[in-house]
Image (cartoon, rainbow, N blue to C red):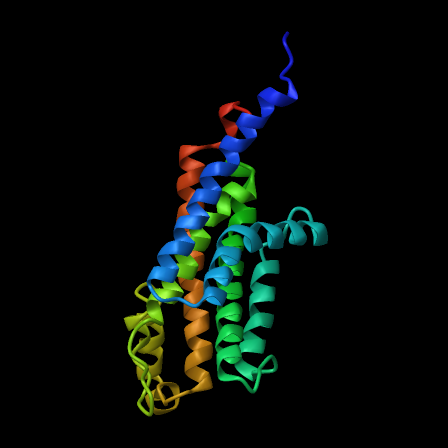
Length: 227
């Protein structure tokens, strides 16, 4: 058997790196073209391509296999930071970045939350390949949902306007309990917290469907090697 030389391996490695780097560069260019600040572009790229697999690998250091309750636990802790405002700044722009970071973190826990259930059912075992698609949907959904009109000095809109899968449940509960005035009041902490919960559930559902499709297309019991 002829072994590959270092020179022969370099083009193969370059091909594996080229397309991800090209994709990241295109995303960054498009986001800057749409007017997003550089800091937000960096956060978007980190929470799509880097942080989800790193957090999952960190969870595997805590417990292997990763228990299904671990990601929801971290989500609740993050939600506590979001609700209480413990992590905050006197600068409004810095506060916005902190809020976006916490929401992106909630999205990340929603993406990796159901994966332990499907991990042994999907032939592709590399989290660096698996997570970016679902993470992209989560972060993009948040950006799309917050690009609309700023409801200054007015009530917040219905949850269903930004959360098509789960918002109607939250709107229904608010109507059923007759707490619309408290929930939809401008800058309501209740609204922000419930929105984050609905957002987590929405991305969690999308992730479950995504992994279920992968398990169907690339089942682990086909006898083929893992990638």
